[in-house]
Length: 440
Image (cartoon, rainbow, N blue to C red; front, top):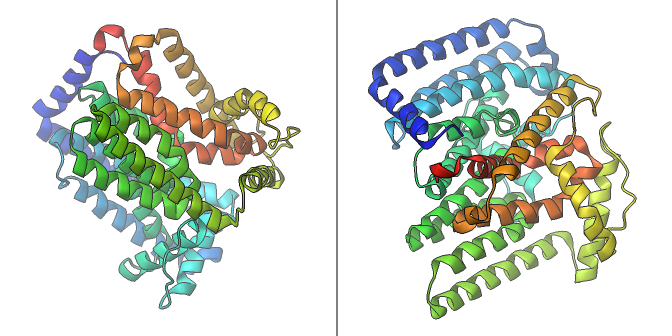
């Protein structure tokens, strides 16, 4: 980060030239629409159409119109004017991703989850089952079916809706980051929202934007807790954990540790800490029991064996998979494998490690991420850990890496997508620790 003063001057520049900025953004919004209309005439839009929608042009145009309407609606969101303009600009990038980058991606990978969700949701119309905790795939199908009751019958429009939820998730994480930084800095919002993997994977039709939205609610709840807004924090945490429980129940268990730390740091008296500890313990047990019921886990040993089998299952999917020669049920082997697994989850594939265009782009992005981490590590000081939200963020990333590292190691393609659960927060931590010390 360049500096707190320059961050404020960036916001002031937008504020003092608000109408000029708005005019420029409206012009760029129009340019994005024109670019999408031109792209709609390319054959790539038709390539995957036969699998999902009958009339490719109509489906595409409906999605584009819906994206334009949602973008203009951002200008009426009840947030600061400068943030509205920033989100409007970011939305234009997401619209380009949804309407241009995604069709190209889908033309190469025709058997993707998004197509399954949309087609299955179309078949469920009229008979939509209740959501079930831990059943992420079917829950996305059911939510997509509900969305189709309101939206026009358009795959692109449904994806645009999920992309908007991804934008809200990133904004929530930025608001939480402001509480840790003790200041506004729109450059931080742009940095996390426009980071390629965040921009892309938070815009798909699938579980990933919804999981990120849940993480955003949890982060916002933790930030509210540090400000003494206990009731608001409880509501936000409950919403976030509920969303995550319906998508990836095990992630709730990972989040218990950072939430617990923030709660212990916030409640100063022993009785309050005791009550908070009891609530957190009950929540952890409830999440574990729900996960056990969902996956038929009978004991701790059974849980370890299921985890080992589950992680190895990813080694047989796709061309970027690799076999694991570590016994994850052996505690010593598991602990010794964590550093390599964590590195893989965060920074692989490296450049040229996957022989494809998408693999090359992912490798270049990971090289940038590794450089940012090295820079932050070189500048970090122990006193930087005085902020409870920062410690909670570090704990969340660390626990996530321990759990997801072995899975990511065995399938680098999956690693790129799963990383969205921590990537915005990891970027925020890199910017926080890499900032000049006089900015704090």
